[in-house]
Length: 212
Length: 212
Image (cartoon, rainbow over all chains, first blue to last red; front, side, top):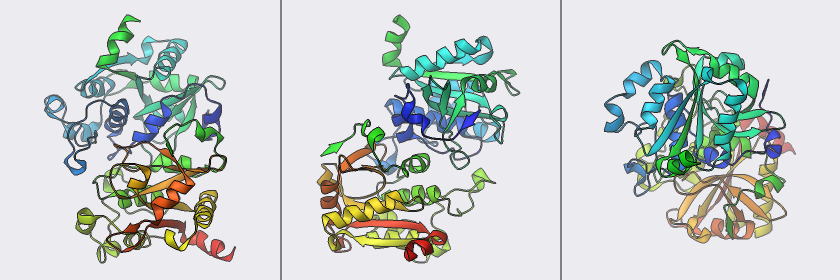
């Protein structure tokens, strides 16, 4: 059901996101910072205006510290995330504080085919990114709820490439679409809602997507 | 001379290091931390026993903070690196504090073919890694002295894949071997010696390499 084998990458047909996710991917700095690390990766990869980062001035980048400017702090503090991580909607509220549109999909509102369609369509778009909220147990991994970006899809194998932000723990791996769907549809005990995914689009590009 | 085009990756013939460097690559947290970020990337990718990292306990990983345990601090402090970065030998002294053998190659002691041979042989070995110390100006990049890991070689194009740890600044790029050689042979004004590369091997594996 899982494969850490990399050769699939060369025959994968939807992999436009991979290189930019690979360039910007960071390891979660705390066990509960998977959503924060995924957001930092995705926002940097979209080229969204980042907060100032004095240590690399005049360059800028999102980091797991500066992703909490005032606009985020007033509803979500680092301490809150450290304690219990984020639910899908809480992470959406952080990410949407920046110059992006965030579409939140609860997986239990989709069937398996519909879920695949949402993920593949986003992976095919050069100006969208995908963060999933999944149950690690379904993937036979240690842990439970976890966020990470997806970076590619292999239609022949019907597998998604998961770029785990727990990089000290697991390498990128190819997950069967059916298994991924099961991992997305579990209930998050904190929110009492289904897990799912965030589709993130720069605001500038989101108008054309909503018109198409 | 430079190419940020990614399609070369698929036809590259020496790319075994790429996936592990990609998994562990970090952005330098300070403009002078390129050597530190490169070392963190490489040490994590070799699976060397990492210092404790309380925030992700029970997991461990090298970070740009914990790469300065006592064994490093007594000869090289974060403040020293913050002020002026590292020379090739200073970086070797940090990395060799861990469970690896570090071979330091000054590029001016090699001709272009010899330099290529050293780099390609290391990239072909599953238990070695390569960090280069180069002059960005020769690559028409902003800045001067800089460290980053190499991750692949394309013999048809005679290009190396440079995984820049100034990730907020530049994506991975393919550099012609001849241009890279010129960038490695320049003099580092701090050391008054040539730049070059570090070939890093776990101590356990280094015995078999020295016997071969």
